[in-house]
Image: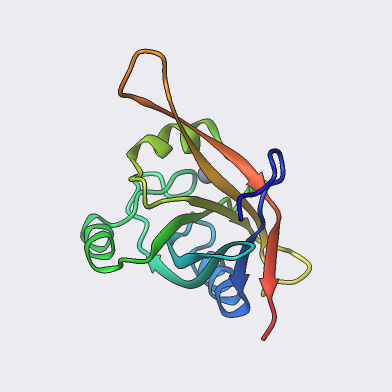
Length: 159
Ligand SMILES: [Zn+2]
């Protein structure tokens, strides 16, 4: 049942989710896209089965993302199967930025996964995606949590 130490379980996503991420990423371009990932823990790794796009209302949407507050609250309260957060890097590789690490502190424990996507100039329907598990560890001052990201292999499930 438990993964061997050091053996990172893959993050699996449905083909329809990959397509939805690619479409949203391109429709927001050159701004960053953001949204919430729904799914469940499954044998062999987490499975993402639905993507809920959210409007990015950041003052500087070219370089940051802030989900629309009403849409964000709505999805948090009404979607019991939230497992992760997605956003895009329209102008750079899908690697977490300093701001991305800082933003992790705002996420509740239901957020287990963190996906970042970048446009694929060779195949627009097939975004470049990186997936990470959000790590939560107690710090030595008590109470507060340190959050980090550990990259996981991404598997797209073809129907
Ligand atoms: Zn970012």
